[in-house]
Length: 329
Image (tube, rainbow, N blue to C red; front, side, top):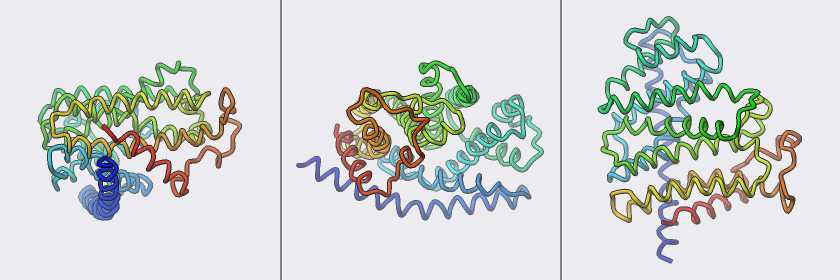
């Protein structure tokens, strides 16, 4: 009964906080992007601009504020600004790899030697400026560079997932590294001293987020001929066990955090709320499989069968149930 009360209060506070924060952080990101456009004399592509704003506005309260909570606070104004610059870099990096414009060699140069890179387009200038701001701030530059290189390698390797015959083990490694290092990078933008267990939590939740994104993109990725673990799935029940194992590993690191049990429990519930989205998607696939030994051919299913609509009451109830189940330490 004590956990149930704690759970309900934590979820209610988090839902209200995220809702209120999104409006404030959206305005903050919009202003920072506008200032950059004025300074550099150009403009972001509308889709990229929206991606930066939307990603930052949801990510900061749901991830970064939750991690900062382990240290008894929310993110500061300076940290928030750095995180906007992070999403500028990550969004433009995706544009560079998805739509071209610069070569892989140029992308490596602007990523690792931005001081010497001669930027020509607005996107290159914006990426270089934000990247330099972040690089100059971080305290542990060696660790930061190692993470950045690992993330770069994973993002480049992910291009091999198109029309791919890569083994599942390789795709899993790419998926986990791409998601894990992308989130772990953000740890270095906060003014905190993170323990080894906390760094593992950053990495593990990032891997779970990437896996969850792939679950929600099954239909889209199949149309684009991008191989992922979810769209190669043949048994939803087996995949649920695999996904649950990742969450169990995350919870083990949460339990090892060097902070009070109260903070760990709140932290666990908040991260469980993120993991729950993945379980909701898997539950829908289990409904498609039913009592059969395996899923129907995902390539033959209609879009509406694979899209997960979180506006449906049944999915919100499932989210609440999975958050409750996996939030308890």
